[in-house]
Length: 255
Length: 255
Image (cartoon, rainbow over all chains, first blue to last red):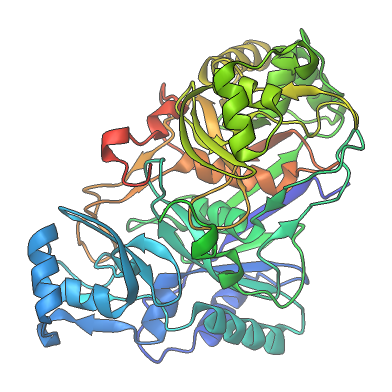
């Protein structure tokens, strides 16, 4: 039987992150200050925001000159043309557009509002600095994992999360956009259920379940913690990438 | 600041559930056997399967006569016409169809594969009995909550979950289809972020995050537990319903 208990620990004391900061060092310092010792199998769940900030994925809209396409689209959806320019640079395609709403497929293949470009929790009111998603969240997760493993000597997994809206359902939940040290999908096909009936189509997005769980502590407003450690989870080990979660366009009935 | 620790406890020892079983009594007995005492604020997360079984939401396909529409659709998508008949009875509309795949909006307003009608974990290989979603999962959650509160004397929330596929992302995660004793959406709009910037569009689907978290222990195959207690979660209290999570069709760009 799988484990019966699972614990999530938020890590207090992570300071405001600036471009160039060493996230591994900052995280290890915060863990030390909380007398928290990483254990083998822990999943370290980190919000995209602090990863993007450390990587300097910040753009001051004052420096952005919108293209003709961005200006036209901005008028259509009633958004700042400079913000639309940044969104288009971060996107492969525009999936849906409507006044106030721009849903795109990001450079990485994630479908979300505004290509994940965000103003909140970046700088003060009146600031024109926006935050983009990390350049390669799977690579960011791998670097974090390597640093944490080198320092702690134990094997951990890392997930980088972002808060995404969904089709059909209101409000956002935390989902995985980067993983390291795990397979994001638990493939139960062919395993017997409790009656011996072979499960035919059951694959479970464990990385998304872990990301959503961490979202319960990582919050969105001025409260909340950007790093959550999940202990006791039964997840498939291996060299997976969050992009394994992306449904290929030709198998996607909803784009 | 919100809490820093959150714990999920699976409840071992829930027997195979049969139509007419008293889930409150069964759950309290299992909690007792595990010396687990419910505390105020606990969220009791229960899979749809045991609720549907207790409510007798079982249909033997041998008793089903498919309509002309069901036979035609079954041929189009290459499914058992009797199963398609049950799916259509459980649905308001067919949202997408393709060989092997039928995505519908259920009677309740959930968009998912096969209207949530399921063969796995119902009976043995060769059985033709299928399980449908509960008649009214929010009402089921309210009844469970009332029973648990009457017996335990503490205020708990209840979530009933189902495993759903998603647009754009592969594999399923656990989501809420019934809630009681909580608001499924945490509305952070207007709250300041850490820089005093007012969050403009942040609403978080806490019931879905709780459901997904419980999915890490509730599994899908012969392992896994149908009841998980979440302790320490910060969720909005109130008389909400999971249907509050449904995006109104006129505001949904993906159906």
